[in-house]
View 1: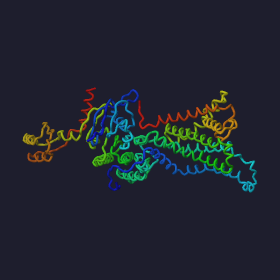
View 2: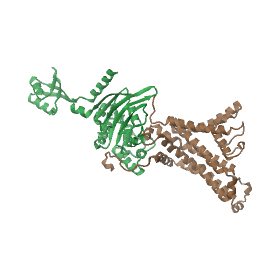
View 3: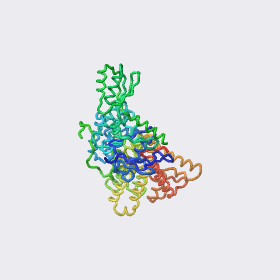
View 4: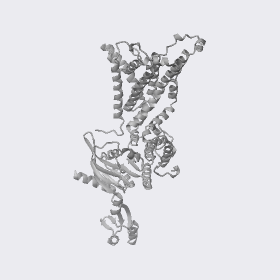
Length: 309
Length: 300
């Protein structure tokens, strides 16, 4: 797969302050998540990749377009959803999205059609003739997504897409992102400081800290290769029960108070554990299915960068 | 993609030419202005003076009408440089109000809630954005100033003949150049103020303040310091000075609407100084626009 983001010694300075320190690397996921604590440089990297901020040194390519030399085709191929408020209060939802689609180059009639479609897609079909100034925070987030997708770009750059959303709104936003990704018609670069958002929508993660790349990981690969953990609490678990569990291929770490941590081999499901427990008359009180989470990867990356510095 | 499908689909249809993209923000600004009824009425009202001037020109050349109205052609206003300087001054005063009503919303609305990054994340440069917004004011103000002015010149020429045009050859050029100086300086100023204060009502108020307070300050400093250089703060005086010289009349005669009357008291501002100040105001406005119209504000 062609790289989505290529960085070649990319450096960004604001006055004397260096915000991005010579980033390099090539990242080719279908959906790349940009993770990092606040102030890590995620939004600056996005602005630089979009040509909104000029790099002080080095260069980069987004979707194959050089950010210094090919800004126009890059911008034409990209849909951008900014982190902060971005709307014109006096315009209606459909008017605003249409304007943005026309600015991207769509003829007025096509822009109008796509604006309606985009607003229905994000769930604002009924509110599309209302002025944006009257929209709730969640609706404003959705209209930002609508304007980013209205012109049908092949690249989508979403900066903190779930910002300010309540849990149902957040689920809806993540579902929309997953839907876009599933169509295979657009590649995504998603910035967030929420690990779960990135984990649920991306296949690769670039972790930034203090303007440096702290880690890059392929989540799909991690999911495939990392072992799965089960936290188990059981009543009446004797040596015979634990022995049979071990024989099934699990690694078992058990404590005398009836709690333990199991590492499941590929192919073994929790159903097998219930069957073993039933055979030994063991009552499973709690079973939480865990895998090596992005959270752990993230904190490992933070710690390793701290150690390097 | 029909709306009931509600899925994402890439657009693969035709695109509009990039060099014409600046017309998109201009068209939307027009659309918004069209929805304001008061503005439409005011715009219509600005045609009153050109209509009266056309009637005056017509009357001067229609003996039947003069007899019927028992008017003496010699007592009617002469159609000369003074007539058109007055016309330009009056219409420019109206265009100032039009710019003050229409201008502040052009940029402030995009900046108030951070819509500018969305414009600039698309294939639209800052230059195209400003060009689109300025073009709205330029077209509006042109329709009030030089367009009807040149139509009146054409009417007078057609009724009076080539000899009149030969004797008053400066008028057409002065109307066009005088209008464009005013239009460009005012348009850039309105956009710069709008980008600076980012709030429509305040931007309108700031424009009036700069014009009227500048004039008052200029007069006050002239009185206090016994000089005439204070007038450099008075934009309408500066524009009036340039116009009077373009029309080729002695500056101290004073002409144009009250708004632009060049005052004889305390001496006159040299033409070069007026030009320099107007160019300075234009450049300052451009610099302000360059500074304020950025996709991303960075903290250094």
